[in-house]
Image (cartoon, rainbow over all chains, first blue to last red; front, top):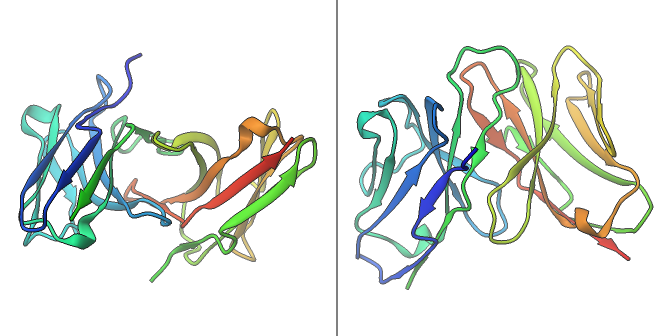
Length: 117
Length: 111
């Protein structure tokens, strides 16, 4: 089974520039998540999709961050304009549909490391 | 408001000994509790989980204990191996199927 694919793995930009990250989840996984992990902290949820609809984006800074999941498969996360504090690893994860019994086990990609100078 | 806390940022253990990683949570309504392991430059990988209706779950060298009255869970690794050196995150799974993570504990297993 192929894992969660993310690109680019690394990106360095200057503040006020824009950046986009791409994620391809595991085939058949209806739920897709974007997490932000700042160095030394745990992952923090930014947005959760169920198919192509948003389930939760309460922690997404909507003045500069946007995300979409067209056709319910791939997803992109965009930051415009970037700030210094956006330097972090952006992790994409996917899981089977909500509502199933048992723990909701997320499978993560390797992440996209962003450095804002 | 931190719902999940891992109060030890790091832990060092000798190979062959037991590693105990701890996690505290605030909301008694969480359904499932999970542990993830993360190596540098990789995404977190799922390790083990426990339902809120159980107090112990074991998988090989890994055992998770849940103390609901204390709102505390722990991960025991016995025996610890150098390959276990990683950052360990506990996470809670609520009714919305989101995962909320703790800050992580870096485990170092010395040969």
